[in-house]
Image 1 (tube, helix red, strand yellow):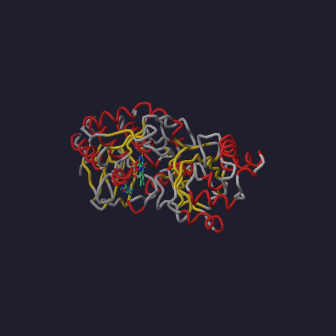
Image 2 (cartoon, protein in one colour; image 1 turned 60 degrees about the vertical axis):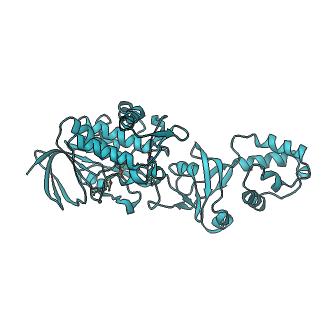
Image 3 (cartoon, protein in one colour; image 1 turned 45 degrees about the vertical axis):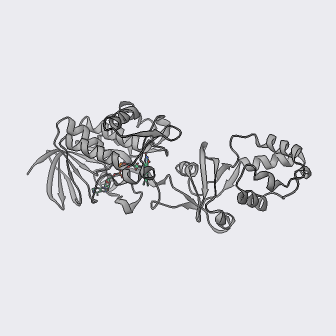
Length: 392
Ligand code: FDA
């Protein structure tokens, strides 16, 4: 039986990167992927164009119980390192907004590139492999799998989080970590649409499909971006971002008119359009049906001249601090990522190695490091995979 130097569980972004780096160091590397192909989440990412990194990566773009943990790996593998790889493979890309880099053509090219790099580095990839048992041995690890028994010196867990079970996500990595004595920080869906219920949902449900630019805030974090009303609640980039900070029973504050001095604007409109009704004036800046709904929910729809200055000011404040009380999230079915995961206190931030079990490593989303929307999660996958790939 071959004794592998490195077995990597999970052929996603982090696992593939780790395999490439370890393979380049002439380690004998095997990737075990339980689904029928590697890189499925890469394929579906960024609307099929893979937002593969972000030019403005900083540790502040990541949530973790230990905000310092991600620093070392991110510093040693930067967005420019991944861009250089992409460029070497002749993959055209562009910056969409806010430093987000997307393929011009298709995310298939990123998977093709990673698989080609694996091949060049002599990495073996076995798909459709079910792992039924993992045991520590004196020399490393013994695995029982649907492809037979496998032995390895180092074992890297790159099995991802719980989001999108349909694409092969499992809790395997967390269970394995627990069996080897690691603690797991509570997991929950993140970068996920928020749901409304009861009367609140009834107030907004028929606005489904309407979108606007807002700033969404919760727990002293504020994200600019789109808000989209859905049949079940609210979504869009600003809502996905804030969902990572939102906790059940929290209130969300949304600035419906970001970037303008609303009180001064309403005063100006009162001066220039005194006979226009509030609803009509609001449609200068907001979608028509939303403006109408806001008037039904919160304001009398009077000609502007009839509002005293303090009422205009109060209205401006309300428009800039519109409150939503989400009931929950759409869950792992639609969440882009999983918050929480393998406790970073028990991992080396330089190598991703377990401090408890020699030869065991955790990389990517299974670790308690979760990025903002915009290419940060892939950058963590590349960087943590690269860190482990240097030492396994
Ligand atoms: P990943 O989930 O990629 O890989 C884990 C692998 O392990 C999978 O192939 C899985 O099948 C396999 N596996 C699981 N259990 C196993 C077992 N028991 N045995 C063997 N294999 C097993 N991020 C970003 O930066 N930019 C973007 O554009 C997007 N877009 C996006 C869209 C959608 C719809 C989703 C769901 C997510 C994103 N993301 C994203 C997030 C990004 O996809 C995610 O953070 C990374 O893929 C995480 O990489 P990992 O390698 O850790 O897990």
